[in-house]
Amino acid sequence: MPDDHRLSITEHIPDGDAAARPLVVLVHGSLDRAASFARVARRLDDVHTLTYDRRGYHRSRNAVPVHTTVEGHVSDLLAVIDERPAVVVGHSYGGDIALGAALRPGGPGPILAVGAYEPPLPWLGQWARRNGARPDGSPHPPDEDPGEAAERFFRRMVGDAAWERLPERTKADRRADGPALAAELAAIRTTEAPFDITRLSVPAVFGRGSASLPHHRDAVAWLVENVPGSELVEIDGAGHGAHLTHPEAFARFVRAAIARAVPTDDGRAPAQSR
Image 1 (cartoon, rainbow, N blue to C red):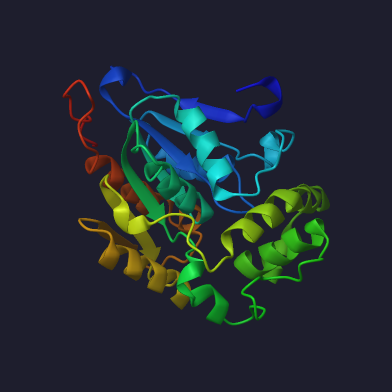
Image 2: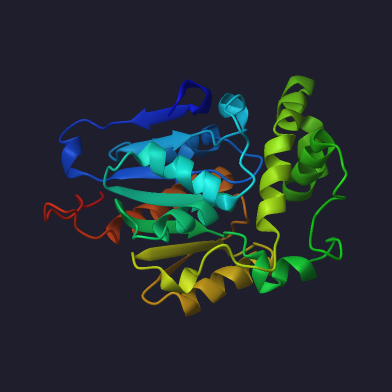
């Protein structure tokens, strides 16, 4: 990427023959960052993993411009993959990005399989009907300050008590992610689907938590029903933030996606997970 477009990337290459293993890219959701996958990544120490702060977030906050479409984030993801055979697993909004990359016109390219944990699908209508949403489905007023919107989003997703426990420096850091959050929520909260998920041509694994909210669970049920050959993984006792609260189970979800990966162009199947 050009210097002003570079993203903060963390890559782990395990001991042994890394060329025989697919790259596994973990894509974070809204108001999150790569570091949230740290406990999951530690449970994937035998896997070639890559995480990155998406444009506008944390250490990639200075990457310009902030994307106003899912497609922009898809382009970043494909640039990060850089034509390497890869399994892409996304959490929440990161799941939409992973699916969008696998559905890019012209074929999925190097993407061998995709995993999406509770990706938002507001065009199905569940988001507009959820408790606390505004009539247009948006979670906050359109003219709200981005920093205040970030705080409101955090409180809604994680809880007031969790926000209050944060040090002031961390609160300020989360508020600084507000412009990126506002841009992507505006892009995703639409009645028009940005892609046709039913046309997915690579193996897919969809995950949800048994304690997740109904609109998250219903969206995943719709995906499993409408994407041929897809697999459901349910994490017992988990909610939307399963990568934080249930890292061992989320790592198994990642491994399920790896196990579904199709062979690479040279005919080799991905190495089996432990």
